[in-house]
Image 1 (cartoon, helix red, strand yellow):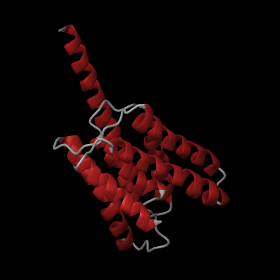
Image 2: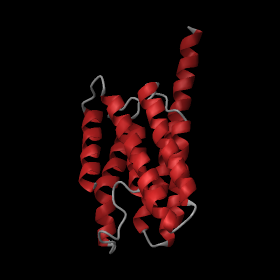
Image 3: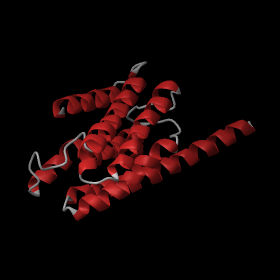
Amino acid sequence: MQIIFYMLSVVAIYLAFRPTSISDNIISVILALLWLWMGIVYHLVFFTAINKAAYLFGTVFILQGILFLIFGVFQSKLSFKFHSGICGWLGLILILFALIVYPVLGYTLGHRYPSSPTFGLPCPTTIFTFGLLLLNYKNSPVAIIIIPFIWSVIGFSAAFNFGIVEDTGLIISGLLTVSMLLFRNKKYRMHDISMKKY
């Protein structure tokens, strides 16, 4: 599955740089698949044996996967394209952090496979999600940001207690992404209001 997850991430990155008429749908489906996998396989199948709260987490992660399908595929409210502004560059940095820096940092700190969180598990995948959301150049639906942000707080707190220092990037990416997306949404709304006046 690690190979499949990384292949999907490469497809998403490629389409963000070389968008096509269906690239937004494909990237949204990839994000949906990742969140559905984490909800069903990670939380409900495995993590419930350790923590019964995983039933709640699993349900919420599945909901997030459905939200990506609703907003990204059925309503076309997500449009992913790399742009050279601050959101674009930060998005790319978060994507590379999730895919490359996160596992390397974990390995350096002594978290060796299979005892380390890998891409496809909640923490690095949430950072990857934040990165792609920053590449969305449409007004970002607030509903699609809430669950990843809440997990960035919960996941960071729990993982840090287990000594997963690399998850510091989770809370930082959550705070940066939410603040920047909300600021950009406000800018879009003000622009729309000013356009309507004319």
